[in-house]
Image 1 (cartoon, rainbow, N blue to C red):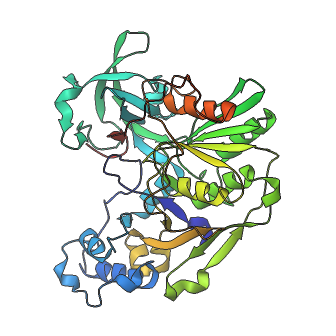
Image 2 (cartoon, one colour):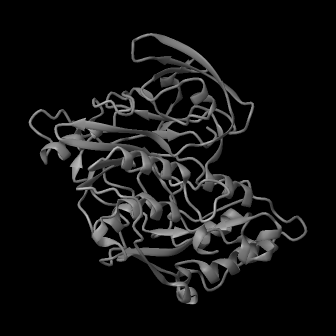
Image 3 (cartoon, rainbow, N blue to C red):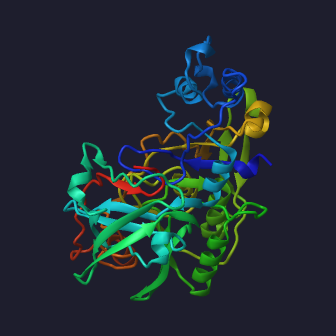
Length: 433
């Protein structure tokens, strides 16, 4: 039961905000304001990965909220991710049940704002919005009027059904259109794009994967989207794969394993995938997991498109496959989160009865060679810029172009137009403001 709840997520980057990382609308017990705080402290002492760094004396009365207490318990040298939410909101996040317009925003090299991706079942997806549409105005105001010191604040309101905003776009053909979108509940898709690119003598699979989300109500925990995508590539007889994780902030370890078991070479079947490590109180839970190869994909190489938004389970996939196959990173250095968590309300009656979900860092993961402490992320082998002005699969995309060039020629080639630059801001629908 415990195993199925493992998640690897990161909550907030300085430059990026991702969907469903944390929701702090936590119910408090009115009868005793310290009851929940004591439950949080006791649970942290039992489960927190860095529990040896917790303060020896904690004055519960000195903290005005549960969130303030948790923050002051966190080992901030490494921990940027522990959070509180509700049980329902955690489950919705884990399975991609969102509310909002359902789009991501990002800047190109000229600091023009574009839609970076769209969830197909969201209000924006149902209205036909696409990656590559330039955003000129929101609610009748030019984008420049929303600029802040740290990026942009569009003041889009709460993420709940019924909130309306208007957007003026410049489309790839040069025309403009104004669309009104009303926020609603929707099921997010993790697979944003898939296709098979045939060039020279190669069949290259291209898979844009946005989050390691589990399909709701399935046991064992897995993703039907992933199953369908792997079947598509297997039936297409691909011999190379580009998996695009540039916006993928993590998710279910079970789903990450599902993908890794399909991609790993046959020679690695049964070999060590990773080991996990808990705090000394819970060291009996330490365990190792081996590859159980599925599908019939035979890949010569794996190219992973990355950015500073590629974190947690995205990095787990890279780290666990590297000992067994050639994995080349194209794009930017990844985020750096080698630790994970799972919800703890089921282990504490007070949290459970008050609908408070505590999700602190509880374990670390090492690959077959023992690599574990990659808090600075994995550097890209080939630097390439993100360009949200072109749609998925368009080889004008610098990162896709660089990945294909590497697979075809072993390098970028003399005609590469890749112009690396550091992504400075992006926002993914999921928080107000």
